[in-house]
Image (cartoon, rainbow, N blue to C red; front, side, top):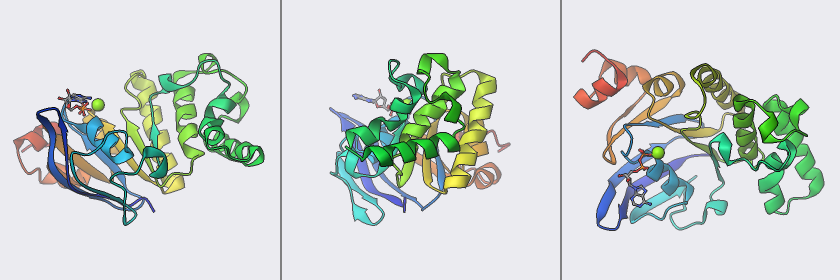
Length: 238
Ligand code: ADP
Ligand code: MG
């Protein structure tokens, strides 16, 4: 589960082609990082995969099934938003339970799944607090908890750490990597931060102006960048 394939996917906003035809295969359980400068199309690509934007052309397959026109809720993918997307007036417990409540899940099942997510994320003692009473890192974990309870085929992160301070970013990076190790679920992680890409990824997708410049492991990109742009971005000595 969690295999995602893009075949000739394009995206236009009006006259502007933001994503020219693009092919990409993401394997089950991989931690894939989309990296590239601001405006290169990382968020658009993630939103196309999530179904939050419609493709202008091409096909998206999730676990071998065409998903190109499926609404987000039917894709079994969970987008992790930045922590400020939490509901400030709701407890941690209610924030995490929210997607299950929306799906009219049985209250007993909700209770179990929230407890399980809280335990994975070390939030068990904070379930009755409100987001405003938590640290930045804890808030980010609540946002992740909201994705975990949906038991998605893949987690999609769009620069989840960009509003945290530097020390906290390092911690959360490790926590997300550990979460990936323990869940084994596919993760697609968008960042403009080379260090995040190099330290977290199984596979890095380097984007420039909506095009894939190179795909490879951190070591492959470092050792054999295909061009100056990749070399410059990855910080390798080419
Ligand atoms: P990134 O996440 O890499 O910073 P984005 O995917 O947000 O880049 O944006 C890629 C390009 O698409 C940018 O030029 C941006 O201005 C444009 N864009 C993104 N969303 C829209 C939209 N809803 N309407 C028009 N242009 C958009
Ligand atoms: Mg973006």
